[in-house]
Amino acid sequence: MDTYSLLRQFADSWMLLFLVLFFLGVVFWVFRPGSAKEQRDSANIIFRHEDAPVVPAAPDPKEDRE
Image (cartoon, rainbow, N blue to C red; front, side, top):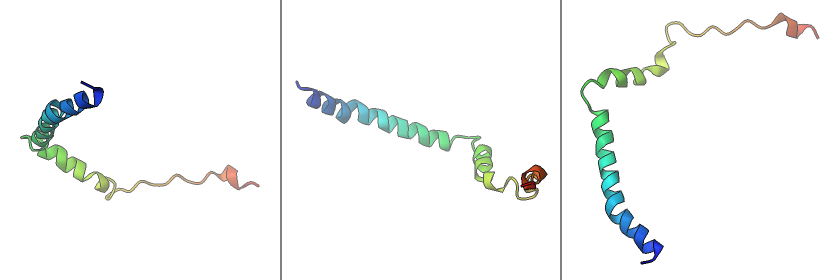
């Protein structure tokens, strides 16, 4: 059996099984009980500094002496 046929047979059987199990694991991990808090925190990352925005640093007076 040549290499192509061996790899093709492996991809058609075991790799398909691995990818299906991986997909089901990811779906279970996302919808697991207790993950709602983590997902809410991730969804609100862009709003963290909305109430108290980051204050830019004052310009350095040494740079204006030219």
